[in-house]
Structures are given as C-alpha cells and as structure tokens.
Length: 467
Image 1 (cartoon, rainbow, N blue to C red):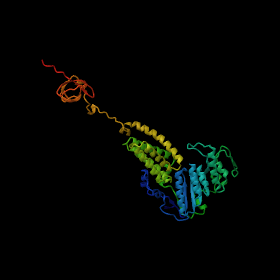
Image 2 (cartoon, rainbow, N blue to C red):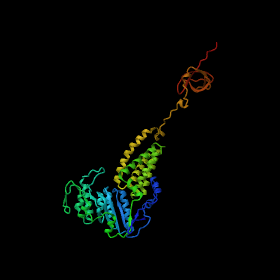
Image 3 (cartoon, rainbow, N blue to C red):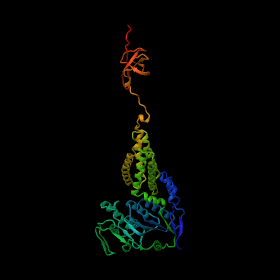
Image 4 (cartoon, rainbow, N blue to C red):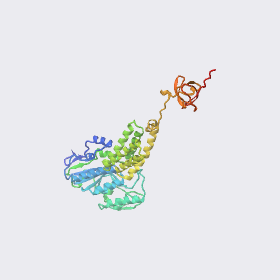
C-alpha cells in the first residue's frame, strides 16, 4: 500500500493495482493459475494499526462490489484499524447482494460510519443503515428503496415488498432508528408520520430524506462537507488515512459480472466456439469465444464465486463435445459434455438460478447466430467431411467407361472355351464375353448379339459347309 501525503495530519494511501496485465492475459485464455487471484487483491504493505480506512461505495450494488468490500474490510480488520468510513453514492442494485454486503458490514470487527456523498438509494440505503453511524453531505439523499425490475418498473408483489420492508426495518432498528421510516422507503402503501418534520408520507409515495431531514428524524448523526470532517467528528483526525480503491481486476470483475454483460459473454462464447467447430479455419470466432468465456470466469473468480473446479468442468465439457463430433458414442459424450458445461457455468456464478436463466437466453440467441452463420458458410462446414459432393466428370479429367453399343454385330474369335463365359478377341481387343448358355469351342468365330453396361453376349457363327 503506497502512501500519498496530503497534509500535516493525514496521508492518503491508494489501493494496490500491481502487475496485472500478464495475469489478465492468462485469465482471458481461460487457464488462470491457482493463487493468482490473491496477488491481484493483496496490499503491498501493511499499514500501521489504528488507521482510518476510507472505502468508496460508488457503483451499482452487485457481486463485484461485494467482493471489493469484503476484501477492503478484511484488510482493515487485519490492520486493526480504528474506523472504516464507507463513502456511499449509489443508485442501488441487487437486493440479494445488498443483503450479503449488509451482513458483512454488521459483522465488521472495526467500527463503521456510512458517509453519504451523493445518493444512498434503494440497496444503498440498506447498506447505510447497517453501518454503526450515518453522516450525510449537504444536498444528498437517502431512501427510495422501492423494489423495481430490470427495466426500472415497480414490483408490486406483496411477498417481495413485505420481505424487503422487513429487511429495511431490521437494519434501521440496529441503531435505534425509527423502523416506520425505513418501511416507508420501501412500501408506497404505508402511511408514515414524520413528526419531527411536521409532514406525513401518504399512500402512493416513496419516502426519501434529504441530509437535513435525515438529521432531524434520527437517520443521520452528522451533516459533513467532507470525509475529513467525519473523521474529526470521531476524534481520529490525527490518524493515518488509508484510501481503499478497487484494483483493476476488481473493476473488470464489476463490469463482467453484471447480468447483462455476463449473458452477452455467454452468447459470444457459445456462438464463437460452436462456429469454429462447425466451420473451421476462420480462427476469429474461436478466439472470440475463448476470450468471452475467459472474461466470464475471470470476473466470477475475482468476485469469489468461480473456483478451479468450475473451470475444469467447463473445459472438460468442451473436450467431450469435440470428441462427440468425431467419436461414435450414441450421444453419450455429447450429453456428458453439455452437463459439464452447465455445471461449470452455474457453479462459477453468484446465483445458480440467474446463471441458468442467463445460460438459457445465451443458448437461444447463440443458436440463431450459429444457424445464420452455418447457412452462409454451408459449403465450408464440417458436414462436408461426411457428404461426397465432388463429381468425377470429364471436365475434371476423369474419362468414363466407353459405351458398348458399338460392339453389336462385330465378329471375332473365341480365345478360350466359352462355358458360357470366357475370353474373345473382337475388333482387335481381348474382352470378357458370355454366350446365351451354349458351349463354344476355342478358336470358333463368334458375333456380338447383345451388349449392355455389364456384359457382352456372343453367339457362335455357323461356318458354311464345304461341297
């Protein structure tokens, strides 16, 4: 961890980025070495005990953020830090990830303060409520935690709304905050009396609090203009300040583990590998597929979900599918290969259900791409190895057998006894002939009476008797 001086009483320490390019290249090829990930996220130096760790929460709440926060909090605990300040500015994100992060914040061995520097909306509000204290900068907001779907439309399922409202209520009660306000941030049907403000949240509204309002209703303990003021408020202005930032690997993981990008990577991976196997020789589809799958497992591995076993299963699945194309197995290798691929991809994901859904969408879209590509390049496909398309024509130098109709009526001599098959000389050529069943002695004259594609039929000529 390198130290950057910013004043007499504090020094900012930036997060470790390290030598990443080589390891990233290896990961893209899908062959990450065990233990390489640890080197991407370890600090170079161990700061002195009693420092204040500042951790930014300024991205969508998803698996990449969960991995980063866990790593940062672990470092703070190992360094016996005096305080962790979570700088929160997020529009929210996945509820399941928010639950995981909230649990991690609650279980931290280091005291925590959530400093809202922008918006603590939706899942961001939940994270803030799980911290020991909340401070807010002027002009910031906290709340608006209504559940929405991927398109941003409100989810009105009572089961989901009730569950998330209960989670928010529990988080608010951790530090004695009014649970009704937390529920009002989630449930638009709930009426909430805000006596401190002289206001009432009516039905159909979602509650969101400004910095001033949050301070008045007890949802904030301090209004501060900077992180320095928060640290001074805690009486730790003389302590070393450590800025924890996501490493480059964690930033990549944040992008590639998002639901849309991970599905896109699966589409590119499946389509690229399949096209390369069906229409070999291009190289680009196969290389694209390898990069896509490599990025998928790289992100899931950095986020702490994909282990070596999931990548081994995935590679085994690819090998089995390739063998199925060349080794007769009555479909057994293909079934095992597909099963290995599915298990490898789902085992390396944060949520198995979402992974299966993404995989299903990827298979459907990739199938359309493969069919289009295979049709366009159908004359180059692997199926040409099993279908004889070449014609042996005279234009290509192949000379077909000559027709035998010209033999009709020609005469010659039997060069062997015809019983009824034998050899005769006709038109100066030795040919295999047969009779209609009669016996012809060697040396007798014969005449061709029939000729087709398979045989020449001859008959003995009756020589005129001498007088």
